[in-house]
Image (tube, rainbow, N blue to C red; front, side):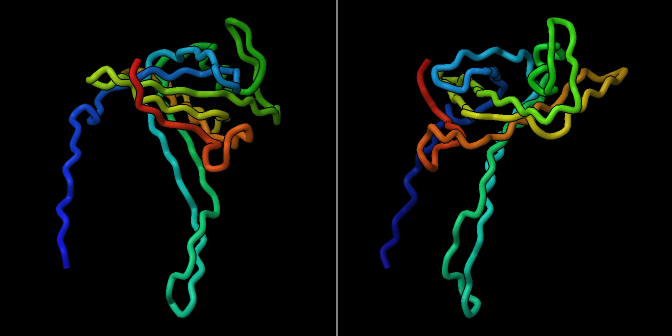
Length: 173
């Protein structure tokens, strides 16, 4: 049997450190204009796929994707009415949000941008995102306030099948 050695393709510029900028837009179509949410403490992107398997006589015969889910969880550090209005469904003015009891869900377009050390940008975008999960504002004497902003992708039917949640791009400025 012939042996083929693994071809090395290491790229030190692809090792990432640091934060980036998170923008949110109420415009779902492209091109969208994004508003910076300010200081972040961290961001996490989760893409999960649930499979269904058909087995016969103890052997895997077929495996299909049953469902998939894309979510972005950002640790926001700036507590502002503008930022909170993205998460609390209701009506807002410059200094107040009235919320609770509504079944309405607003969709947003989100974009996270991280600049690498070689000046390339890694961009993560959700085409149609809805806020989800719990919103916790913990006021503590010795800690800075951070709160999770969780956005879950919904299908964007204007995109092709298999490309309806979002995209990750590596590009020049």
